[in-house]
Length: 257
Image (cartoon, rainbow, N blue to C red; front, side, top):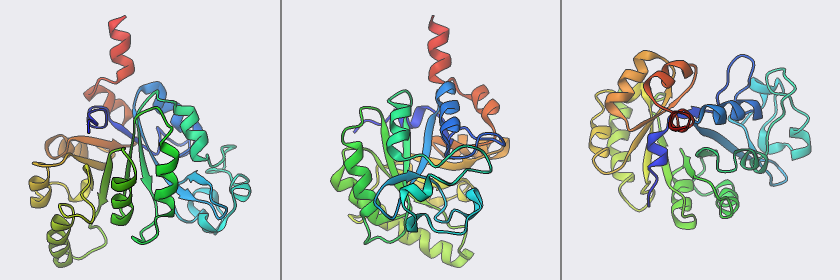
């Protein structure tokens, strides 16, 4: 399986968003497309079975409504506004129609229950007919395993130890090191928290067999770590710096004209 496109172009975290363009909004995606960046998104299922592009499991932070995404119908979700703007929550279909192969997509499948594959199944079914480049990832090893079995798209394992003590992190690193090379997950790539990337013995070992993408790179200091320890970045807030360091597909095409 060839997914060099995922390792050669920086990935805009939830689109190229800022104070005026909300995360995971159509304008943020349009901005990322203009710059030629791969786009990272997050996908949930509404209560009536529609895939929607939204990060949190609760609407509170972004929409100001204290309600779970999974407990809302699509019609209810479409009444919500993102960060006080006129932008609404996109469906996965709307997002795919917008991108239409112009740039690559890195789609995070939300949910942590390894025995609940409803979101993974819906995503895998939908991307069967998508013509552009798309990779799938999740914190949920069950979802990653499902994608490996039911999709020909690259699938990656997301990981962070930020909520664990140093002792637990050590044990979990050993456990996950074994998990990722056995039949439970077996990802094509790993997406790892930049805050735990430097001097990480597991990542150093893992990179010998699978590529490592790191998130979220939002400063020059983190970018320097990523350049030493990872194969690509998922970034936000440092668009100008990223464009200085990397030549986007759009810029390369313009240079050839």
